[in-house]
Amino acid sequence: MYNMEKQHKLGKLHALERICLLLDKDSFREIGSNITNLEDAFNIKKGQFPYDGVITGYGTIGGQKVVIYSEDFTVIGGTLGKQHGYKIANAIKMAIENRCPVIGINDSGGARIQEGVNALAGYGEIFYYNTMASGYIPQISIIAGNCAGGAVYSPGITDFIFVIDDISQMFVTGPKVIKSVTNEDITASSLGGAGVHSQQSGVAHFHAPNEKDCFEKVRRLIAVIPPCYEDGCIHMEKKGMTPSAYNENIQFDQSMAGIIPERSNQGYDIHDVITGIVDPGSFVEVQEEFARNVVVGFGRIKGVAVGIVSNQPNFMAGVLDCDASDKSARFIRFCDAFNIPIITLTDVPGFLPGKDQEYKGIIRHGAKLLYAYSEATTIKINIILRKAYGGAYIAMSSKHLRSDFVYAWPTAEIAVMGADGAADILYGKQMKNMAPEEKAAFRQEKIDEYNEKFMNPGIASMHGYVDEIIRPEATRERIYGDIMMLSDKRSLDGVHKKHGNIPL
Image (cartoon, rainbow, N blue to C red; front, top):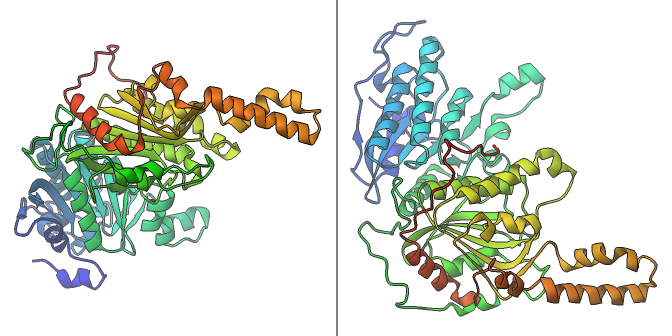
């Protein structure tokens, strides 16, 4: 019944092999194996295609139940007809009803042309249920072959997209169409390969060298995210596991004390801070290769699932730009939808200046980040590690956007801008006619004065914008205690409205 060899010749696993490799051993149960195409059209006979080219059913990953579908490229190129589309839509519906993640393995030639509008109807049903599921159950898409035309918009709605080297191809219009319209020659890989979407477009969230590695990454993700929306902000590693008391087994990580360099313009790797906060080996980074000036991902603190949003001083000094704002905002909204506490690690010199960013719409994109943090009602804890300048200070989960707790390390610098720039703007006219030596001494004096008066966390703490100044080595314990304190958090009622208008 299954043509394994045909798929192997293409260097790919078969749809059924993919399911069995991803799920726990012997856990898969197929649903709808006897469904087939129903219409005669253009040399296609009714009942010609077994299971209409898509295998659907359920199983478990690490004991967690999931619903899964896998398109079979060996059956009329995995093209989507009416029955094929309805099988996928019903799988998503089943996942919604049973409050568990849904995983789609995409390997299809697109809409089945012979079925005309019925094929488009199948896509419409899928998009509808993708939207219904959004924010209620996690939706994961694996691009394990072709995914083109209208087919790309189902993964586009889902929460996480996985791509695989030399296998994944994802684009709205393929190379032939582009050649006919623009006369531009481009390969499928250069247009919509794994590297393109993981590094340039930001469409993909995870990138793997092969299918086996991809499925292992999916299993790791399923292990750390909650299976569905539910009230409360505590998602433990194991079902029924009880969080430990926050005042028991307290341990301080002394290695955290020396992470921040002495010079404020010197970079460091934010992963070192994250490692000192989360449980060993628990961090799962999302969109690792895209917008690397921010780092986002999931981890656990004493078994409790958390989402982490952080600037990356080692790349572009951790500045916020259009892509970084989009990446962060999308991740924040996922965490908030599933009541995952958001831990923000702030070291940001500002929004990236320049003509290119203005033309790209940094105002619109930066507004998404402000909106996402302001709208989020899950637990929000912000640690200001070093720089927190200007509008970017506000955007990174500040007290003004209703972060529950904002802490600062002693190295924190909270101000409109850096001391060097401030001195040049405030005293530029006075320094204009000074001799070089006099100017240098005067400028340094004003820089030191600005640093003393405005660049330390004590000023923000005095006004209540920072709740406490804490030692770096106490950060993990402080965060865990706060999560325990806020575990029954319920937001106060806001303005009654249907919904806001996020700047998309």
